[in-house]
Image (cartoon, rainbow, N blue to C red; front, side, top):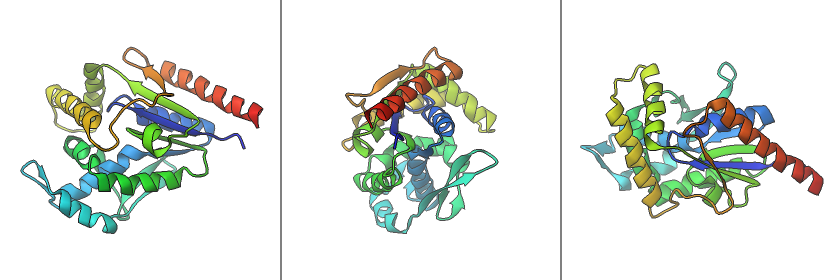
Length: 234
């Protein structure tokens, strides 16, 4: 068996989901967007009015966890799996700036992380998976065959995110998006549980000045080298 586990971590808006999805499709692997799971829980909190006046009711969210069901369902028209929250497709709703504003706060709750990490580890137990997030190479799959860490300058990431939101029809300003990117960097990197950090054996990809094609080719070459080495060692 030559399939491997690929963990992709990095800062927000570095294109982790895009590269992970492309890689999984090319290799014939399962793609899991762990960030979508945290976004779905954040959307649940917003809809249940557990976030009011910029305050998150952590205890009520923790109490609600047993009744929250998350799953990914492949959409053949789009070519990737979409996230469902309690059997409803929320793929579009979880990408809005309102969710981005609070997702790091939800993601830092230990009980939330334990629930989702357990689900993620179950998804990847048979290998042949590409998963992206903040703690995939350090917590979810510390023994992953390949670990990548994506980074880019904050203003470059904010510009990418701003364009995405405008294309979706969201009314936002660049300043709001940049502030959100920098805020999430701080929260993700300083939280007490599973903070965002590069695994010691991760390969850093700085895509500040890199196009999508160049980035994908570089990552695919790295993945193929690891896969080929695994075949030789088998």
